[in-house]
Every structure is written in structure tokens, then in C-alpha cells.
Image 1 (tube, rainbow, N blue to C red):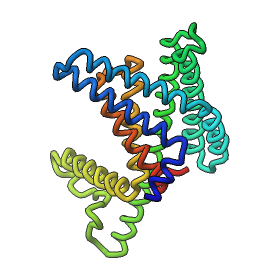
Image 2: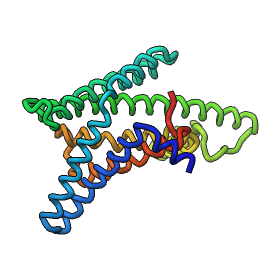
Image 3: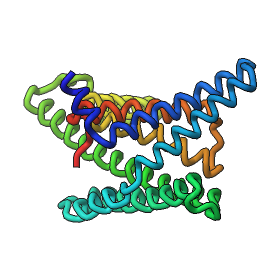
Length: 259
């Protein structure tokens, strides 16, 4: 209950709840259309989705300033790769929120002459760049953790004089002279890398959640920009999953990836 009280007190929480409801409506609308529901019901779901989208834009007013502050903090990170990825991601988020604010002004009637299609395309481009930077940061952190885990496994192997700790080892060079042994050797190395990746992600839940959330969010701008048409069903499902994961990081702050 205490965790839920803290969650509800955050201004970001209301936006995440609206986001989850919006993409749930998108998924529901797709299901209703697929199963031949009445046009009136489908229209009501689309209207509700539109109202939730407009409400989210209102709740995000001022988020550009927060993103810029986050970018200023990220500039001081010691790791150059993390500094680049996180700073560029926050700068793109700031531009995305700025475009989103213009869209809100147009849809609310404050700026009726705004070209909403043009600004929507701009906002999704910045959103896509931000997600690419987030996934690049995730890939970099996974690589560092895999190298650390591999080194630790090698040290344990040397200390124990044999055995495979947890089924992870780097793979020897035996059998290289055997005809046709290259493909099995490659398959073994690939399997060991996958096991190592699974161990790293299982041992770092915040990183796992961040990867899944960013991967799900990636389908949204790809579809909206026409780079990869996924359909409203996939977009709704991915948006709903990423929204639920975002809500979890607000309820349980230890699940949030840092820095």
C-alpha cells in the first residue's frame, strides 16, 4: 500500500496510467474490429483513445525542461559512451516533448493552424532517435556485464582446475583440426554466449526491464513513421506492455536503470 501511495503521488504516474489506458484502447479497438463489433462501439473506443492521448499531452507540458535538466546531469558522467548515449537520448526527448506540446496546442484549439501531421512526424522522429540511443546504452551495458561475467567465470575455472560454473565457459580450441568441426564449434560458442546473456539479464532486472521496455516502444515510432508497418494491434500491445513496465519502475524505484 505504501508503494502505491508513493506511486499515485508522482505526477509522472498519472501520465503512465493514461498511456496504459490509451494503448489498451488501441488494442481493444483492433480486437473489436477484427471480431466484427458494432461501428458505434468501435467509434466510442476510438474517441476514448483520442481523449486519453490529448490528456497525456496535457500532463506532459513542461517535460522538455525536465529532459534538458537530465541531459545536463548526464554530461558529467565519467564513462564516455554512457555520457554520449544518455545525453543525446535526453536531448531528443526534450525535442520530442516540445513537438508534443505544439501538437497539444493544435488539438486543443489554442493554435488551430498548426500542421499536426508535420509536427507529429517530427515528434516521432525525435522519439525514435531517443529510443535508439536508449537501446545503444542497453547494449553497451550488457557488453560490459558480459565481459565481467566471462572474466569471473575464467578465474573460477582456473581456481577450481576444471568444471563449467553455471554452464558458462569460453570454449576451447579443441577439434579445430577435425574436418567439419567448425560449424559445431560455432554453434557451441553461440550457445554459450546466449547462456551468458541470459545470466547477465537474470542477474540485473533493471537492465532487463529497460531492454524490453525500449524494444516494445520502438515499434510505435517505426509504425507511425511508416518505416515498418506493424498494425494497431501490435502497436497497442507493445505500448501497453511498455507502459506496465514503466509503472513498475515508478512503484519499485530499484527497478529503474541508473544512471
